[in-house]
Length: 74
Image (cartoon, rainbow, N blue to C red; front, side, top):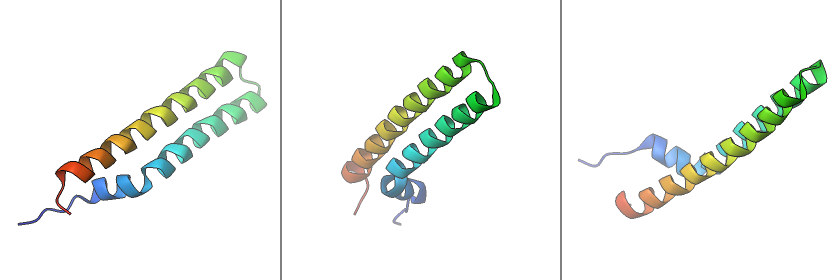
């Protein structure tokens, strides 16, 4: 019985795009909060969270791609 892993296949294919879109959404929310009059630390925290999420999700995408290439049957 051959198992398919739809999430792994999805994340290998679209992981970089998911990372970019997630980071941009958080950055956009931070910008909207700054425009609405939020304190400066909220905007800086949103920017730092955006960068951190982008790096972590890109790392996860690369990690899943390596696992898919080495461990999953083709």
